[in-house]
Amino acid sequence: MKRFLFTILTVLIGAGIVAGSVWFLMADQAEPATLQAKLDGSSVTVDGKSLPHATLDLSIYPNATADNPGPTGGVYDFVDKLGWPFYSPSTSLELPANSVITVTVKQYDSSTTVWNPYFAQAHGTVDGTMKVNGQTKTEINPNDVAHTFTIHQYPQSDQPYFFVSVPMLAVGNNAKNLANGYPAPETIEFSFKTGAPGSYVWNCEDPCGNGYVDFGGVMSERGMMSGTVTVV
Image 1: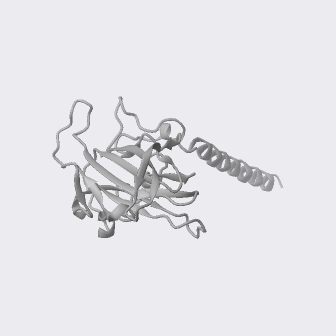
Image 2: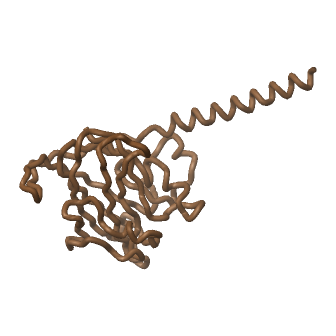
Image 3: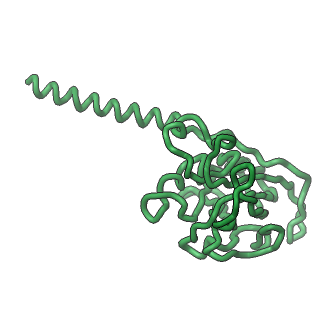
């Protein structure tokens, strides 16, 4: 009887530790502070409609530094982020509904060949194009992709269809770092239209993590290579 009670007690304690750990990590993995797109006049679309225009500025860093620690607090204080790439200043994005959004990304990371050439192309943008260092393009070489910015719906979502995917050009693998610890960035700019309000997710589709085909770890971490998009 004592052995039975001891076994039950051990199981309950173990379950409590697991449940407590899960609760702790979930609580500490709260969404990063929301980054709101800035309203900036209006934009006339190709079909002649005038829509509100907003801008959003992001950066992609290959790793954290003392001056640029990346996401902090919670679970991030328990992992070694030195070799983890991340989007900055936040991965929780808020966009105005029924508007044209122009995103400018400063990309500081080197290349990891994208598995699917589809994600080396621009999708869902105005005219299906993007600007890479000021040049209008529809795609880049899959071997030159560092990351992607890919917005999509939750599985089985009944919200308005929303899909945008843009490849991020990599800096040269031999590029020298500047005084800030990073090489000179590539600049990628693209615009797309939002529809009705809704909640979506976004992530990188280039294998820059670990685990199975490099899509584990950092790839699914909010605050790093995935996040949320709220259209309001």
